[in-house]
Image (tube, rainbow, N blue to C red; front, side, top):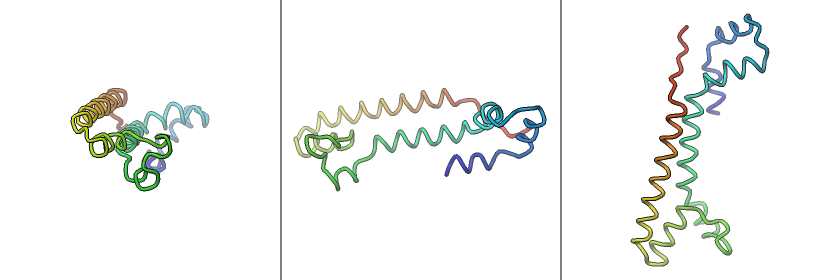
Length: 121
C-alpha cells in the first residue's frame, strides 16, 4: 500500500515528459519511478527491519519458540534469557548488541537513500 501511495504521488507530468522523450515502460520505471520512490523504499525498509527485530508476541503466544527453537526470534531469545534462564546480564548485553545492529542497519539504509527526492521541475 505504501508503494501504491508513493506511485500515485508522482506527478503525471513527469511520466508524460518521460514518454515524450521516448522512454518505454521499462525505462520509465527504471529511470523515473524507482528514483522517485526512494523515500517510500527507505520508510518501508526501516520499519520492516525494526518490525522483524521486535516480533515477540505472536511467537510467544503461538509456539513459545517452537519445538527445538525452530520459531525462535531475537526478542524471544532475549525474553527467555532474562526471565526463564534467569540471566538478566546476558539478556542486557544481547539487547545492546541488537540495538547496535539495528542502528547500523538504519544508518546504512539512511546513507543509501539519503538523496532527497523532489517533484519540483
